Image (cartoon, rainbow, N blue to C red):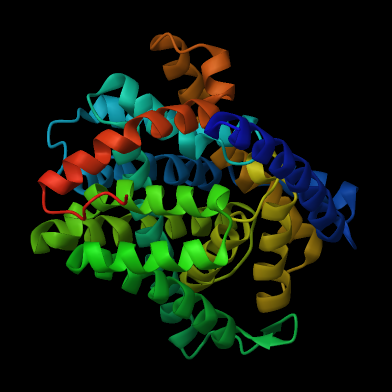
Length: 369
């Protein structure tokens, strides 16, 4: 079975699971909510604060595009801003329209179409990007929890700082593996290859090793202290601006929660939508907002759900429109958009041998026998 066929089967499975999970969480998000009260709250929202929230959720896409250059510059320093921005908009648009987060793969595919960047390198840079996103969000979560005025509530019986600690351990462990890949690429990949061979069937273990090998080139930014500091600075700028947009939205719906509450709410939502969901993360997004506002800050459920719907739309519409515009402007077919994951799987399968040769020439590990 080819990589594209495996990807297609996996996509179908994740799509079904995502829709079921979204419906499940939407049910809990709607419990105790009055539709009439929600309509009244949405109609009474402050338009100026709401406009600020829309701008606040959209501008970080420019920041994300600037940061992407710092991640990919060690391998391909001349990528154009327009190409990276278009790829980002199209990718996030696809996440809003198609299931199973196919937009992540589509971002890599579109950038490789617009710039001379191999898909394996582009995809690897996005893995690095997500690592920095996760670490930054964990740090900001601890910052919010460390403020004395933060409520000492629990979620699902677990103290919030324990939940944050688990996330810190997870992302810290991943970060250690990434750093080890930078310092000892041959040894780390060899160890992972041996473990994969012992614990997993070849059909599953081989793609993991191939992915690690293709990822090594994208980790080049971590080797450069100036680039690393720049990526860290862009990451904190990105997510602090994101939290500010959450706070603007809270003000629009008359919810008096301080900025640290918005900071924490952003982390709750961001980690929640990482699980499989329907297109646009509907259901899971609303339930995460309910957790972050009702259970933590005792906000009225009707007002919290009103905010969830209103703010979700504020973030959903602009990037979807921009993504559709760039899809049309760049002549990308709808078939390519919907089949982004399969296209990436096919391309990666073709590019892996060349990627190994490049890595070996740059001091990477020897390709396995």
